[in-house]
Amino acid sequence: MRVRNTVKKEVLYKKETIKKLFQKLFSHNIRLPPIKQYEHQNSHQNIQHSFTFGNFLQKLQLNSNSSITSAHSFIKKACLGFSYSQVSCKLKLLTFHRLITPTQENSSMRYKQVILLIIGLFSITGNANADKAIFAGGCFWCIESDFEKLDGVSEVISGFTGGTLKDPTYNGNHHGHYEAVEINYDPNIVSYQELLDHYWVNIDPFDPRGQFCDKGHSYLSAIFVANNKERKLAEMSRKKVVKQFPKQKVVTPILAAATFYPIKGPESFHQDYYKNNPIRYKYYRWGCGRDQRLIEIWGNEATVH
Image 1 (cartoon, rainbow, N blue to C red):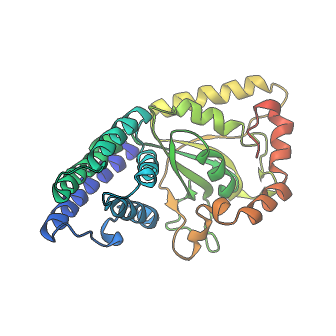
Image 2: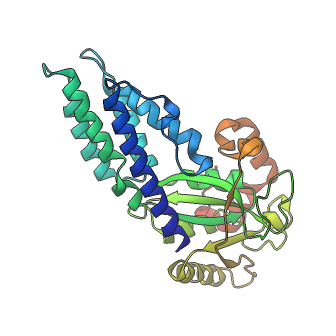
């Protein structure tokens, strides 16, 4: 219920934002608003999505001599970012291609047609397919990296969950919380079951003290379920792991989803750490022995880096 309510709020917020953007474009001689005009409801997504949408609009200001290759590439990323199915994305790309291919038509009219397409691109259908999953598996840098490589996953957010303390911080107090990730995914492309399968082979389910070189409560593994369907699937997947390793004790619990607190503010550098600090990240991952241990447990099933 928590996930559905969140998605519904995001859909309504985005629909209203697009409406305001549309009105602004046509009331100022179709001049583009500043990039910051588009703000997502969740603070941890503001920078990424406002930048994305602003650049998307700017790339549509193409004259008759402009190449549309870069715009096509950008729309593909936008479709993935807002959980579009690949088929839907391709159809919209074809429409986009026809609309902005140089013709003798009035450029202002053609631009208005493109704006109408934007309304469709970021309409309720895109967000209706979005869903969320929350997993804890030790260092969130690594889990974020592991899941963002999956098709159908549009975003993975690092943060804390599972505790009662409000607004936990990495360098401050996060007592009782787990380092975790919130995964935004399109169930039409990747199922919750597939997320579970991917999760297990990227953790050590037998470690009662943490994960790999990181020890302590915040580094414990756990699956956080938002409803009965997720719980049933999670429990079935756990039983499968228990059966696969009869001589070892699986300690990863299945817990009810609690408030998820994204890492933000001065500590937001933890988001996308593996992308922004690739050398440090790889050194940490190797030094922690994560991949070595995963291969030891899972063999060919391990999705190591």
